[in-house]
Length: 217
Image (tube, rainbow, N blue to C red; front, side, top):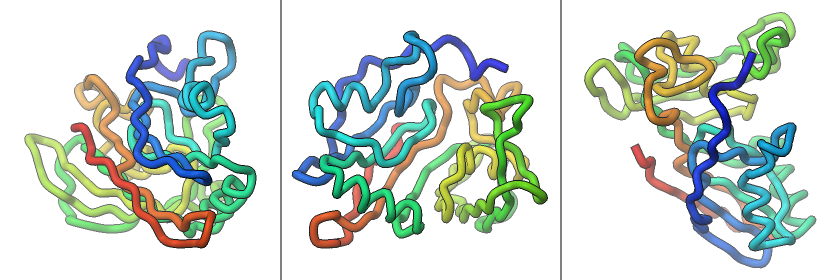
């Protein structure tokens, strides 16, 4: 299946949140790939734009194309290893904001459902209790709109499409999600998912730092 419509990345200039000798934090726009896809038409991405300004920048993690918000890049191989281990050992703390279809009846909770790629329909992911990898997301209702719910999402793991599939499993897909929403819930200008805050330990000295960008929706 196709991911969605043709790739038309936004032309927003780099939105740099923090830059020092070890790390670079940026606010990724929605609609821009984190890394290149397969084919020349998918070559424009955040890492290539960053490396044209900061050639030494190195990838640490990714956000989905249609997700916006805080991303960290390493400026040295040491920082890349240090940050990579923090993500791998779940030492970073990530907070997202999302708008969901419908009204969540319960104000907070945890989704603990294992995920794996849905091979015949990749890149879709699916819940699978036999072969899925552990995936856990805490969620909390922030406010209600007309037939929608604004939530704060705190993933404890970092599986592909985790937040999107976990919200779908609650029966409340993320508004504008081109893969998992349908009907009116899909009909939005963008996917309503934003990486609002990232907490990490600085590779030089280990001081805990917090980087935050308010959701644009």
